[in-house]
Length: 263
Image (cartoon, rainbow, N blue to C red; front, side, top):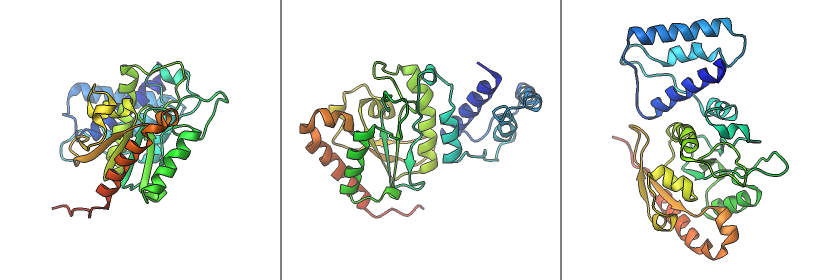
């Protein structure tokens, strides 16, 4: 791992801690020495990546009571596109940080994008899958600005490869940061991997779908989460479109309820 990759990994770890509700680190001599070493490295390096150490020091708050600086969705997307936290970066030909409104009512989370033979793609779920998804969103009477779509795994994945638990864990931090930043009113997980990972469950998707589950990131609000089938599955099993539509109607009804005012 290069120095730049190490600094980026530390930055991502700190941002993940933020999304979990950790607002400061206890000051210690070891922490001070580590921060100074990182700043020394940044001063000597020429690349933009190593300059992240200076930002890192500001985010590692040394005194309690000061909230750490938060990254934006755009900054997080930039990190995702150059991520080297796991071996999936070696085979990716495109990253899928996601797209949509920055204050969405609904966050849609799929499993991952299967790499295309052409080597690049503007899709999130896949060309046909995206077309189906956005038809679903339109049928739910949701505008594009009301929805943000992303994946559990942010790198495109070869068709012959299934991400392992360590690779999923590497990406989960990014997803949790997105949820904390976007603050959606509800989450729709599409696919077994996305549903099981966010719910911390090994139950098959057929047993998870059809009802809302509670989901929370750190000290954030409890969000209703509806698992359902992925468009890739529906393209191969069209008979499951009706159960999926039932799930989407439940989400539509949930979002139609008035937003409760915070105390």
